[in-house]
Structures are given as C-alpha cells and as structure tokens.
Length: 190
Image 1 (cartoon, rainbow, N blue to C red):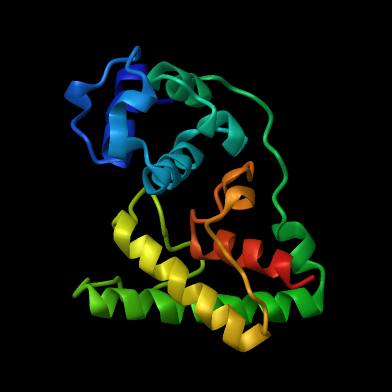
Image 2: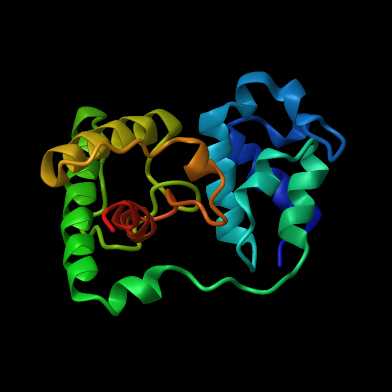
C-alpha cells in the first residue's frame, strides 16, 4: 500500500501540478484548472489504479480537500463485482463488446496519429486510457472520447455522451482501460 506522501505525489501527477505545492489541507476548489472535469477524470482513474476497492465517483467529486482524496485510497473496504461478468455470459453483448473494443482501438490509433504519439505495438483490452501508464494526456483523452462517441453513433445508431454526470457518478471510472470503456458503452446497447 502507498504511503500518504506517495498518494499525495501521485495525485499531483494526476492533476498535472507539482506535489510540492500540495498539502493534505489544500482545498480542491483552490486548485482552479488543476481540479477541472478533465483533471477529475484523471484523478478518478488514478484512484481506481491504487485503491484496493471500487470508490464511488461521487465520493471523489464531493471531496473538499486533498486529505479527503488520500483517505479514499488509504481506507480499505470490500471489492465490488464488475459488470464484465454479465457481458461474458451473453453472446450478443460479447459480440457488441468486441465491436466496441475495435472502435476504441481504432480511435486510440487516430488520436495517437494526430498527436504524433507512439503507441505500444500491442494494444490490448487492458491498455490504459487514463492514469497509470497511459500514454495519453487529458486533451488526447477528450479527443478520444469525441471520436468514440461519433463512431458509436455511426455503428450502432446510438447517440451517446461519454463524459457526463452519469459517467462521473460511476463507482469505477469507465475511462480506466479499453475494456472498462467498452463495458460501459455496451451497457447503453442493452
């Protein structure tokens, strides 16, 4: 488990600010652009990566200080079962997920090409989109979301907005990996 100082440093990285400028008492509202919606997505993903449990997104969004965010990671609790179990047991949902994964991978490559970003050769379902070892910055993730929304609309005739209040209230960030994003999108196809 990470120490409180290590968590503070990782939070600074997720918010793209120097952790030396943060203390546990730092109010999140005082961070300005470092606590905007894109930064929140990055922090949600980071917390998902380091917490040993699923954290309700509203607990992150409702946090008032850096200490509140650190406490979310440092506190242990029970794991919540993911929606992947349901998709694996249903052939139609599984085929839809495979198609959505292809769309996301194609979109990742498009964003990388436009950004002159070198992606790993083997992009698989567990490739990170946000946090951890993700090769994407926040603006590239925003571009990815727009492209995926357009592709899903074209392929499934479904108007979808991925970065919305519902997404932000998920217990686990759908933007964590290709697989988690695909699971989230397939939920709209039911």
